[in-house]
Image 1: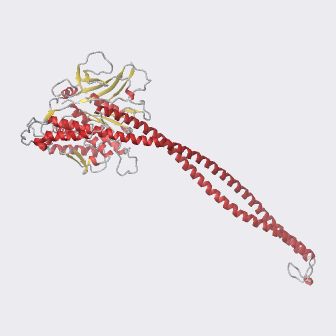
Image 2 (image 1 turned 90 degrees about the vertical axis):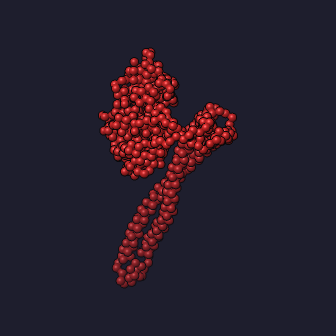
Image 3 (image 1 turned 90 degrees about the horizontal axis):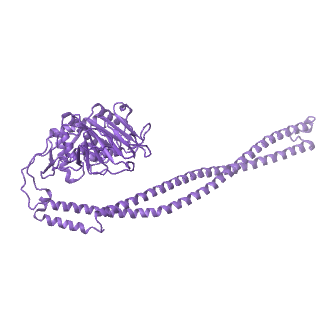
Length: 615
């Protein structure tokens, strides 16, 4: 069978510079900041491959047409051309990069049809050489033609599906499609489509029997009785959109007010911390001043006593006769001038002690003066902070007054939104019940003989081994033992279902599923479109032991081995869209686009609005 390689994605608009990326036939990595159009590239590729709509973004204003260049294994070049809101797709049998007035080689509808060839699904399936293959439609054994969208959903994976809890096999999330989605994987793993055979009665038909219509009517009436709003689904959706817009505006304003309040609260805490430190220091200063005041009184008392001792010594030394007052000697034993010498020595001792005490007293007074100045400064700072705290309290009060009505309004809007969502859920259930009622036959057919429609065990085991080898090559922690349950379509790694794992492991296992399917089928010549587009396969993964690390960043060793494996053992064409910067070691072997990142030449997928058109 043939395979497809994506060559380029180009947006054109009158008077607008082209917005384009070219894809490597091997590995292309598009990374950079959020809101730069990375995921829009994945959505645009999916839209060109037959998705029903492409939700606009502000950056695509003025652009009217999308071109998707493709190369077929047999050498043909194709360009799919589609307007941003068109239901038809033009096909040109050449590489087209600009507006053209030449007629298209084919004009096709985007919806698959089993009765017409004029749609993009049948056209691409015919290019691949697999048009007309059949898969199961439902559990009754009815079959339908393979749709190219069945393959695209397994090859072009957006970020929400990448990390979602739903099995990678169950691509739409609709219960009525599960049988068909499991059958698609069986077709890819085995290469054999489903034979047409007798069909069995459905589950609903078996349960309701002869009273099936009456029971459904009763359920429909019960659900209609639960409706409380006199509006149809379209009107309800419009109301819901308006409420969501109002809620977004209120949330944005509340966020700004809360951020301002948080800043003020932090500032108040800082001022209170500074004030507490100053109050403590002021208390210490006051304690020191009290102690130094006692010491000052002691010094002044000592100086007064020294003065009195000096005066008493002079008086005693000059006027007293008889026994010496200094040494106790009697007059007959005293030397001439004895009193004069002793008086001189006393005066010298008193003077020396007086000088020492005076110096200490003077130093103490200087210290007391410094401490009193510190106390005054601290008191002034505390008074100033008290004014600042009062002003902050006033601002916080004003913010609380602004937040209170917003909180009330937001609660009311959320309650109203919940009521609308409940109404829409009831309408959806009514539609489902009406569809079931319309599909019921008048009589139950005879059950056909049992027929095997599961995937052969050998093919399941082979695919499990392929995923195991991929996870091992990426050095994802664990033994990476993979099991696939064809009944539930659940993939388990090391005994744990993927749906029960964390977001990072769900993403990496989904990526391994898509890459392994492409690698296995390419190597065996089995059915596969030939390309894989993965949005955020490794962004949210982290090693189990790094529990304190940022949960939004993947460890560099797994990232390194992830990209190295895609280069060393290419599963075909792979396009990776990530926020994180890829390893520098792959720069020479892969085509890399950096959007609004360090050293990047492009701010995003679309040129700046003021950039003039080229050509």
